[in-house]
Length: 401
Image (cartoon, rainbow, N blue to C red; front, top):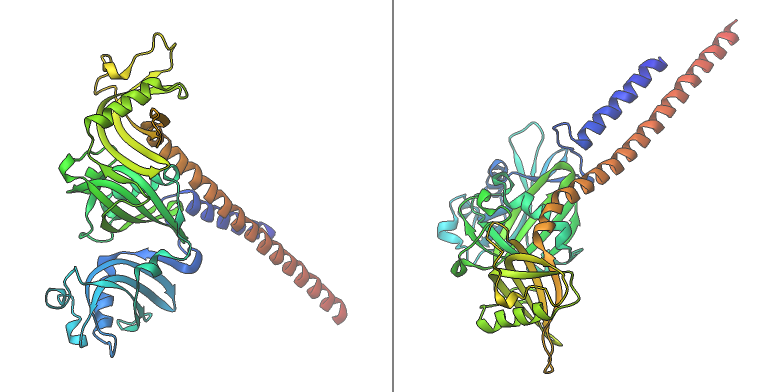
């Protein structure tokens, strides 16, 4: 009996470990019981439920995302862009053409309950959402270094997009990110980029023509321990958030870069630019300028022998160039500009996958430790009950004799 019990415990632990650390399967039963659902697979339930509505009639212009929760049946929450209409007859799947233009649609959350073993659904509620309601409650500024791997894991895979209507965006600059802890992480990435035809064209290192570049907010749901990444929404930003504004690169901006870089003595690496990709400005006590350039690093040398970037980059070619972000501060007073930071963006990219893997392993090991502890406790209880039943049986036998 003990050997059978031990075998069951080991098998249960192995199954849970395989689910957590890989093994080709996703882990269900997430905290709160809610997981993202496929829009195309679930939208028939939405329109079937809307056809039963007796009040709060809406015409759905677009399904942004869907959450699902296993209860005694299935609970779906559809996050949609919709318009109020007069009756349920105006809520069909094709209603948007006549009743809900995309520029007047607003956000709604629609709760639908699907009964187990039946083809019937129940419309539970239709609730209007406001932008403020979406943005409060746990949103905070995130770290681009930590979140960049999640961004590219989502945007460069076609299967990550909640529906075909969401634009695929090549992001040439990641400006900032806001995040919200749910059963995973919600992100809002503020980027500069351009539309591209496919998700594969949005991979790291993609490029845009100058005339096509604009600001976007890209909403992503990420759950690294199940390798789940969803692009749920893309909106155009005007102007960029965070106090930074785009600037057209003029000759004076290039001169500022050359002057600050050649005079800099505080950074170990200097950058000789081949191409100025973009420039942003932020008004502080003076002005911060954030340059994104393709160029070659120049290791710090003796000041008398160091290459001056203003003289050009004779040894630098496109094959050798890397992406850099250089921030330069221009004081209010009549003082020269100075280099505040130099970031090698290619190193950030190389570190993304290892950072993501470390986080996944840490999360998986923590969950595995909790589950193994639970298995041990259950096993001890079973052993205790087994022994107790044996003693009780022996006592009964002695009493009978």
